[in-house]
Image (cartoon, rainbow, N blue to C red; front, side, top):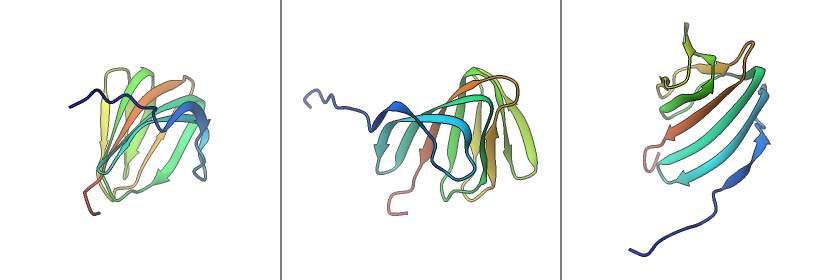
Length: 112
């Protein structure tokens, strides 16, 4: 197989356009049929509001720290820790007094 080097889908930090997102920027690193990988940067007070998705998502805290919730459960994310958002479950991600950089990995089902 030959070496395949290509540009990533969105290499620049861009504000998240989802309704209700505050102080969050992202880079989309990879989009495939069954997988999307993005890097997210939260300023203090940043938030992705509660929503659900039809696929599971892993969120990995790389720097700083923040919080996540699934349903009524809340937890703190710190560097080197990850959270799994199950498919169809309500979830959100936010910061309070510090910033956070997180890796988001969305797992799609082929054909779904």
